[in-house]
Image (tube, rainbow, N blue to C red; front, side):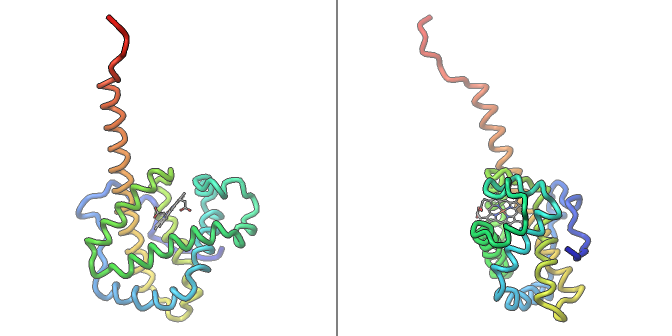
Length: 195
Ligand code: HEM
């Protein structure tokens, strides 16, 4: 494993409020875009490394994935076609996010929507920040000497930003389901039995 990063712990993801949203400044946006050009060439590799590492460091995440939950040997996952395509889906979301850094309102909609779909995948918000940490560990060796503490801070901020919006989407979807369940209880189906 051998990659220690700090500052992306789940405890940093409390209830989302306006002031809470992590902000990226112009310089950070430019740094992310520049480094993405390099990372982009290895997205399939990064996607796999990221998720194998995630399952090593947080085995409980593997249970969320129907296809991988019974795989004991994580080395086997490195060659799995499913993990490769899942990694690519996640990486193409990061690609879309980088492309929308100048139109944050469009990125917000996308990330909230992604959080809603993660409610249906049974993937709760406490796990989202782990992905950012593993992404950073996976791209460091690719960027080599181009990796700096400032760049690390910029990527951390982006992942924190995305995680919080995903969390918001997850919470919205949770409340929607609770409301629907509550109103079904209040208005039970009319019975078809004679009085
Ligand atoms: C920053 C964090 C994450 C990002 C950006 C992300 C992104 C994505 C994307 C783009 C998809 C494809 C389907 C869709 O668009 O709805 C997806 C699917 C999925 N994600 Fe995530 N994800 C994240 C974290 C997690 C975590 C931590 C877990 C589990 C512990 C998880 C579990 C799943 C599952 C089960 C699916 C559906 C199966 C599949 O597409 O292979 N995700 N995720």
